[in-house]
Image 1 (cartoon, helix red, strand yellow):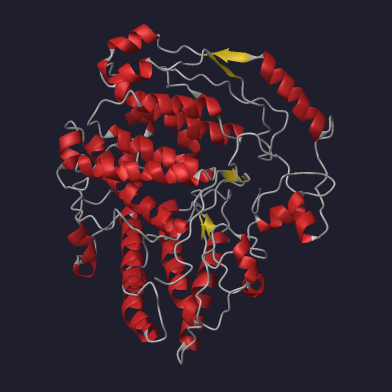
Image 2 (cartoon, rainbow, N blue to C red):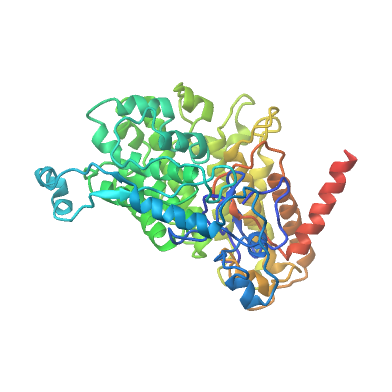
Length: 537
């Protein structure tokens, strides 16, 4: 398999990204850069972390320990270390952190855990009942919602056990920020309606726990140990055979991966795939089986399988294993509908994969959803990757141009001319089509770069998203063809990332779906050309 393939790093809302992405010190040969909100938080492998990053570390999108006057990374590289001046004034950051620490130890939020006796009465939770449960949780540190780093504004209190989700701030934060990026759970109004049924509430509590954890990350710009512990506890209460656990673990794995908890994230997504196969969510009639006669719920289960399929591909590229577990499963699940139809509850008759694969012969009025095109993009990328051996050599150059490119180009050529634009007339970005285009271009760059004239830089090894460069030089007589393909896809990625959206708000995987096909000079040159063209217009 060629090096530098679909690499994805999951992060939560993160530093502000300008209209034209900062390519200059990107260190990956191939990075899935599914960005987020206009703020991008630093990597968070620990709960207690530096909320301040120096300018050199911030520009390279690497972790900074915030030591002053010089951070550890800059000291090791023997380079100047500078910090941006605070615009808020008041206490120094050290003094402010100390005040927060003292405040958090004084103020605790009491948690209402089920009593051990009550747990013992539940046969499914007997093992959990033997564990010693905490009585309270510390109040989370306050955060500044203005610039995405820890500040002085108050953050919402953490309440773990909550049944009134109608006005819950964290649930609202989930739907306002995350749901449209990965729309596989029920839409808000349908979820609230389902939760009103007392018989459904126990099964939904673990899912609500994960949703609130995601919402907290957007609201507080940080990780919550309290909510994480409650998520783990809630998983033990899921009834055996309930497919809701697939949704829980899938969503939880994404949250973990955003905060660089990669080992646990991989375990969660693998568990989700295994449970999905046990529940046979990959079969066409699974939606009817678990949908309870509700068309919206049936659509939800179709989306759950396909989102698991997509995220599995993202992880495979990120970890460099290219082990596409869900791709290897023969799925007969119908394709999802349009987002507007899903939100309204007016679910049409679902289209099949065969219909999508033969869409060039379909009537002109046949329309497939953006979700369907995203699924198609992942399928095409995986198919293209499978045509090239892992240990590629010069002889594979022609085979890749003939086989791999036909799959990737086919997806692009069959896009509707008028429909399925990434940005509509009102300036709203279709997030699913945004991801789909990025995947196609990332796959193109990853396949062609080893055969191109674009060399790998040693600096790329700094990035956690980058893959090891090939041991041997694979430059062939067709190197110019491969180089042009890489440059064109890189330019297409830049155009996508530079779309004039009101808010740079994309799926967290975007942070590592950005590519560095040669080095930062390539992106700077392409960026200058794009800027000149924009000025002419």
